[in-house]
Length: 327
Image (cartoon, rainbow, N blue to C red; front, side, top):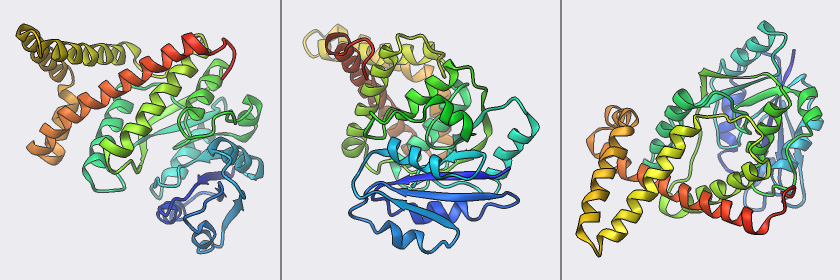
């Protein structure tokens, strides 16, 4: 069998490193399809031309990642398609190990791999996010299908209808598609032994706020519109508890500015929040030291708080303004 690697790209200079990693793959028949989604600031063709085996398609205007990936699948000649972000990197044996699952299990429809705890970029937030995502995937996720590190039979992908092209940005199209995959009964496994290196935003307080707020907002909309008639891909109780705890701490701190006893309650609840996440925080400490650990405890809290506020806003918007069956 042959696997087609689908990479949608928009103004991403890191595509070069991504392709380098893919073409180091061994013991596997594969092709690489790059779909340039109307890039204006980066010459994608110049990057792709370094790789003679790479197939390149370009849109004149930005159509959105869902459109670009769907187009890539249509052009694929492999029986299996593997989606990879343009700023991610895989290991030389990644494709081989993924293909082995399909060869060993005739009933399998797809494979998803996890994120490595080692990021592409060596700055603070990339290190933080890599550890946090790796920890969550290993401990709380069971069923996942996304646009970065997921493989599926081309026939199954087309049968499901591909990524919903109503999503014009990269925030919820993969989440929505994943829900449709599991609702239709396709067998997708999550191999926690295979990982890829990913690139994240450089600055949480600027780029991260916009990106993760929008993502949480849109994903809550998706869940609402599916009316929760869908299999969850993660431990919802754990995350709901984190969300509830984070917003409770915030409210108590606000009240504590007027009534001092609430401030002590906020500190007590923050201690409970930290103890609950102690295994994650211990990884921060072991990997990068005490100062990184202290900084990451507060970053993690504010990250959860922001996601909570954005998700709540998405739910309110869905209840007030969205029709039941609209996207």
